Length: 453
Image (tube, rainbow, N blue to C red; front, side, top):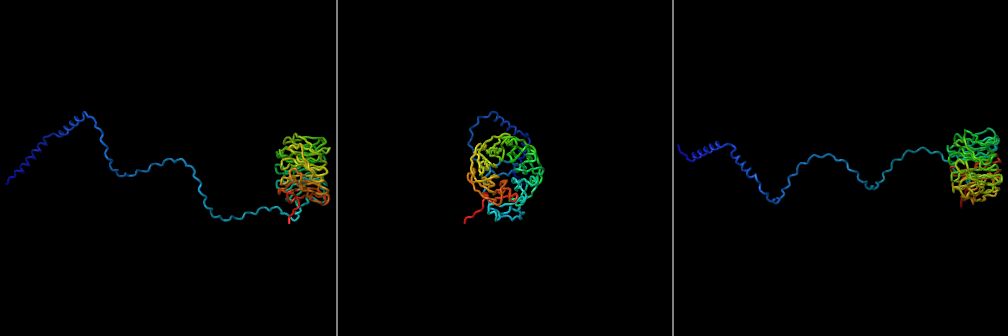
């Protein structure tokens, strides 16, 4: 066998190394190292200055997005922005269905209206009608109270149209000699209220209509009365009535719309109160024109709505009827007969003085109202005919006079008002035919139409 010394030597060395490793205890080297570290750190030295900062390393890769957080609360609303431009108009919609037909309008003007007025017979002919009074009802139709002497009774005619070409007539009081010198107004309830004299007992009576036609009424007796009742609806919506009694001028204030109760005050007398007429002045208080037995033209201005007190003034002289209205200037305007037709325009609300103008040379049976133009329209009897004067200004210092009915002996008991069409309406008695007539003006001036060529 061939001897290899190198191999033998290597094996011998490996065996010696193995024996040494087995004989050495585990952990002996680690313990020595720990003691050395403790000895090194037991008393550290001073820290040296910080070295310069190194360069920033490259940004790492973006991490994965986390989950969405909860929704926060809604913030406050911001201010409104400017309005945008209007968009273009859309296409028109389809035409709607045809509506129901409206009510028939009033009758148009006829050829006779070119005269400036039309005339209609309300009662008669052949039936004597002594006095009348006209008002416009809540339905827009004229309502006329009148005395029928043949039966000594009070009647009311409810017109079927603005001209009163036809009407429904009702006797509302037939007991005794009743209905003379009636005066009609429309109360706050929209129903007629008629004041009149009961000559059988010389008492003031009132009839309150129960419907627009006044086909039924309730009547009340309010006190003494001898002539010329005049009624107006006060600013409180209640009736205010003036008349002459044996004590003189008396004024009655209704306590309710039916005037079933009232309070009465005597102002001037005993020789005063004839030809009285009452209106509501621009201050909302009663204003009464009348004359005394010496033919002095007087005015009583109520101090309160009930007219329990009044201031009395003499503003002229009058030998016949008076009629007072409140003009567009808020002042009283008194039309009166003193042989001629005259007008007294009050200089203030109390009418303590007035300015007088002459309108026509002859007049009786006077009635004044204020037209749609704010100027007075006066109906009156003159020389056997019915005439109308339209004032040209508030004081009526100038006017236009037209003869409305010249035929026969007519124009008695004239009563003027203005209809819902803004045109004058005058009720009167035609003695030549014993008929109650109504004249309806065809224009504000109540004059014939003219056309320039």
